Image (cartoon, rainbow, N blue to C red; front, side):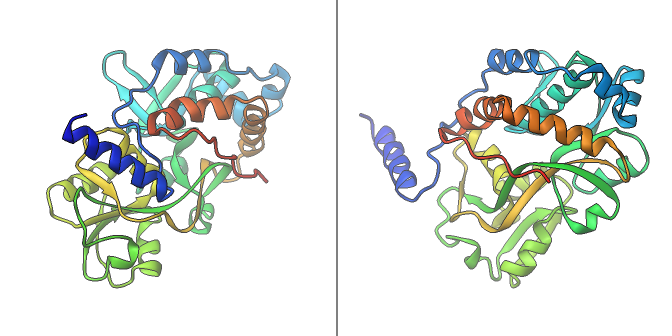
Length: 300
């Protein structure tokens, strides 16, 4: 065994001992399995679609207008070779499109950021936003939420080899990146009030700042940080365990929309028939070397 192999094996062993997932770094998404899962997704009863104003408008238009992202490795990443997006969020969006329209490909995509998600819904530019969109009281004043469909806590990412920051408790005085418009600023204000916070518009901008040494840490949803580690570049590491309150991801819809009930029925169906677990496994579990499928959060 080479020295590099020994070091890697030691890191994995320590991670397992500490309760941190031993990442299968660089493990590619099984596109065939993902595509097959989406193609086999359930289709709603036509009467159920017709009875719901939100769903019937989408049916009549023949296209679901999706607000999402295409740069999140585990949740929604554009494959430039075939022009398709894959990941946990992308899979849910495609399954929902199939559920309503019978064809998962009938999606009109609009790129959103943490700062524009409410506005595209308020302006009727999209039918829904599915983009690791945390449910908060402030956001719920402007938009409606179906779900939640996933939950996460916050995490701290630092450059590989950083020994000065072992957890969020070490962020006092440290230049710390987070995303504007996300829950990151509020979490840092509560759990690391002495951190020197710098807000960036996108996940990629915050990550670039960390890699370039312009900040010393990056705090955001733990699941988004798993995206970074799953790339297998080896230039970053998690500092400590996830912290803070459970952050529930919802599917954003226009305020007052009856689509909430329709989407919740869809989520409950794919959770009950095992599709949710299969999607998590192919998009997140296999990518990060995590074998235990989490229980989806309860839907009201």
